[in-house]
Length: 456
Ligand code: PLP
Image 1 (tube, rainbow, N blue to C red):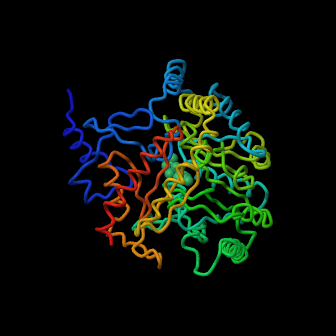
Image 2: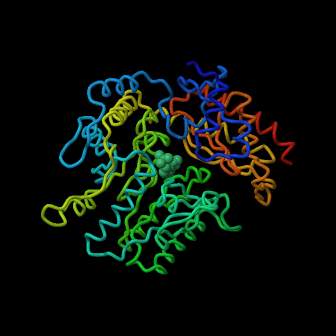
């Protein structure tokens, strides 16, 4: 039976619980149906075409409908779609992708544990961190320091790591005392009178004070995104990450870099931590761009030092007892390999390094609008913060839905952006052309101009 768009909309309202959804409007309006996608465009049920300004959700890095990835998926599915990776069994794409990741990622990040996405990779990393310290005879070293406005996922533990206030309402939290949050590296909202360097000192001291307060023997790890994504695209002050890493070293803590958004080219590098910010994490978390969003895949990648500890048998006959059915899924890993091959072939990182400054430069003209408080980001990752009063940096109340209004105005003009609180986020496919950058910034500008009178 052929289903009409109206059928799909009704069935969707009745049966699909969508993530991050305002049910008040969802139940009356339903969903827009994304029907097809090609290149940097997504096409809705009515054939209306939109520039995908958010690459699906920070993930479709190489654009939609790329034949090479589709073929790699189909070929692997036909050859062998799945076999379990437990114990001493592997599949060829999983092993080869792990070796490729080891080659591309910095330092001794050579040991890959595959998961089904970013949340499961962060969750697994925390379990491994605890296991690692248990094995080293430090069973009290368990606490994790995260940051306000961080986003690390939606499982119980990763929602606890997440520091975005709005994700907490009426949900419970587990493992009381496990996670402690320090301030976000939010330059725009730094205390009045502090310059960037003083703000950095302030954040680093706060971190060290918190470790001392909790007791270094109790604190296992720090987790951070190189640039905060879902918290509103926050670029840390110069030197911040390297100094936080040095503090971790001083107190025998591990540094977990959550590069779910930033790895695989969004910042013009395979990963951002070492190349852009000068530190080598002990654990790196990747997902999203790893397969360009074609199929779900995540990974926690561990240093040799951690691997040496976790791979030492606990006792004769004991096994490392954790893992997922879909760890190292053959089709997902084939998609990952095809993604990496295309990125190398087309030198996508170099393209992003070239196009990124143009994109950021064009967006910075939005500063001329009274409601735009800040335009920030790096390469193909941008956030535009809307404010009620830009001299006092006063935020709009959530009920105003300022960023949501910009989202709607952009959508009417054929551009998809993502509203998060008062920030409009852009994270387009990395294959954006100069023309795509110009069109996106032109539409953003028209949209902000349209909504400004209603906001002031
Ligand atoms: N970490 C970061 C930095 C993210 O941005 C996300 C998702 O947006 C996650 C983790 C969670 O990844 P997933 O949604 O694949 O579970």
